[in-house]
Structures are given as structure tokens and as C-alpha cells.
Image 1 (cartoon, one colour):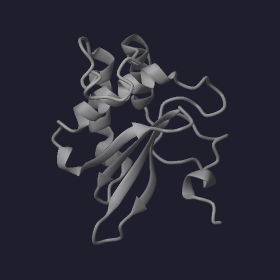
Image 2 (image 1 turned 90 degrees about the vertical axis):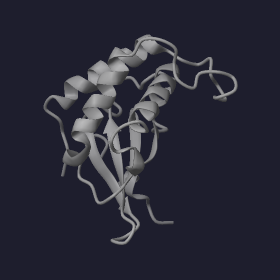
Image 3 (image 1 turned 30 degrees about the vertical axis):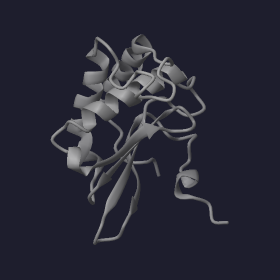
Length: 154
């Protein structure tokens, strides 16, 4: 089998940032997948699942209510627990979505109250939430986005 694109990235050189991970759909139906890398792979501890779950609920809620909501396909965690994927319609660059991502993570960092979608009716694991740690990771990522890495290292 052919190695998938994300396994071709040298994770030993990867730092937190906002990267174009892949492009699909061709010119007629372009789709861009972004790598929102929050922790440094294999160097920092991975994010804990309750925080990731809270960030997923808050991030998806913010993004699907943003001015770019019609372009959002998916926002969710990486299996390695070092960040999130954002999949959007369009032939986009990291610079195109950086302001949106900054606002989304500021929303997560400052959010107080009930977690959207965190009920037994709305979520398959609604009790696994950690707003305090979601705040921590969102603030950590926002600090990286002040002077962001926007392209995978060569």
C-alpha cells in the first residue's frame, strides 16, 4: 500500500502551527484539510481526551456559526492527540483561515458556561469534558499563532 500523505510529514521537525495538510477534489470541487498542530509531536505530552472533546464541541460550534460556515466540512481531533483537523471547501492557504482560527481559539479560551452539545441526547460521551484544560490548550495555541508556522518544515 502507498503511504498516506500525513505519514510523509517529518513529525520530528514539526512544531505547533497551522498547516495545509492536503488538498482533494481537484479544480472543480476543491477541498483543503488544515493541520492545527497544538503540541509538538513526540516532544510534549499529548492533550488529554476530556479537553480535546470540549475543544471539539466549542470549536465546531464556533466555526459552524462563523462567516465561513458554508465552507466548513469538518473540525475534529487528530488520533495522535497533538491537534485538530479542519476540512473546508476551497483552494485555501493557511493565511486565508488564520484570522478565523485565531477567533475560534480565542472563543474556546474565553468560553464560560454549559458546553454546547454536552447532553446525553446530543453526544455519545457527553460527560467527558474539561473546560479548564480546553482553556489552557486554546491559550497555548493562541500564543503560537502570534507568530505562526504556516508551512510544514522542509
